[in-house]
Amino acid sequence: MVFNEESQVRLKKLFKVLEKIRGRHTELISLYIPAGYNVVEIQNMLRSEYALTQNVKSRQTRNNVLNALEKIMNHLKVIGRTPQNGLIVFCGNVSEKEGQADMQIWSVEPPLPLSQKIYWCDQTFILDPLRDMLREKEVYGLIVIDGGGADIGFLKGKKVSLEKHINSMVPGKTAAGGWSQMRYLRIREEAKNDHMKKVAEIADDMFLKEKDLKGVIIGGPGPFKDKFSDGEFLNYQLRKKQLGVVDTSYTGIQGLQEIIQRGEDLIKEASAVKERKLMEEFFSHLQKDDGLSVYGLEEVKKAMNMGAIEMLLISEDYSWVRLKLKCQCGNEIEKDTKHGMEHKCPNCGAKMDVLEERELIEILPEEVGAFSSNIQIISSDSSEGEQFKNLGGIGAILRFK
Image 1 (cartoon, rainbow, N blue to C red):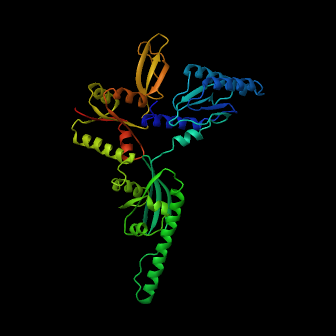
Image 2 (image 1 turned 90 degrees about the vertical axis):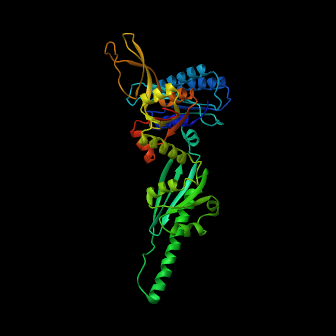
């Protein structure tokens, strides 16, 4: 399995689903199988667990765990051997209604090789090893500072976050003259120094915890940021990672976002910068109405069939799926539609059953890849990404029209 950006998005969506699930009792099974591990040994271990589960007093819990174990063992028979990075299986009764069963199983190849075997039965799925693998590996520390306060945050992947706002105790300028003015200026300089020390202490504490920190950028609307940057306020490890200083017009979350926009030359390889440039190109073509940008599923499909797509753009929140549907009258159809919709048979009008469901965010990259096109998953965390999502969440930049 090639673990690309589309795989990452699908796995993050699954993670969000799994972390919300709560079993009524200790009956949700998490199974982590290391890369290269003998499946036969896992099957033997599961059979032993099956025998032990027979002794559980609660009939309902016992049956739910036994059914989950059977489902996992049958699944492993089909797989035969562990994938390249190992295998993670989650299984259990996820029904929220007492006495009703909704036995579900999820099988995942992790993005990184598993080294530890885990079998655990609990009221929640064990997700910490997977959470660590999904942690953003592209992290930048951001500081916006002026005499009125400071804001500290991160760029993690494509998301800018404000983590801490710090109020300043620096007094404003005074018109008093004579010795009182000199004394006031000295007090003001001391307050500035204390403010910068406090900001640095908090930034040190936050940034040094990030083992994947690639760099630190400092910004602000006035000269205060330069004094902070030039002074030895930050920890020496962070000063080594300082990438530069940029002028911003704002503070707060807007100021942090402005650091990324105005400091893009400092982080050219950051995925957020690359995505912003793509969005600028996409919307520029739309504004020019030159036919080199399209949006909406039907327009994208047309361009795909022509081999015209240079870059396929899909929002991370795109929720359309491809369904295989069957009616009791025997009619079977395949349909692309929004997730969660009810579908009636075009022949008899009866409700159709879902035989298979796959997300288009998984299918379309496979189809467009046949035309040697590139794919970009667009985050919804930026204003451009939100605008793109509101256009339908799918579009393309074309080679020709």
